[in-house]
Length: 126
Image (tube, rainbow, N blue to C red; front, side, top):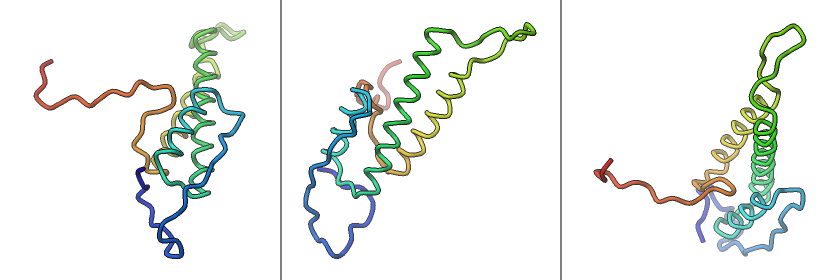
């Protein structure tokens, strides 16, 4: 188990592992990621709340991405102007929130549903 870089309260020398319930409103990839993160890291109650917000931001970005895939990036307004669809800014804002919350948690982990890839070695061809 990895520990976060946050100081552990002095009242508990060895914090006990609590069973944490996964929020039901999250998507399947976000729920799997939640379970993985909560098993890998020792999280306090406030970290769990941030993690839930992080997962919700990811789900919102994914929902916007599906809307973009279905409807495209732009639409034509009544006056003939081509404008970006609202989903574009929703996705962008959700990904910014996701990245900030992930940074706030000090987790160096892949996002939900991402393939885990090893970093490239320096000097490896290409």
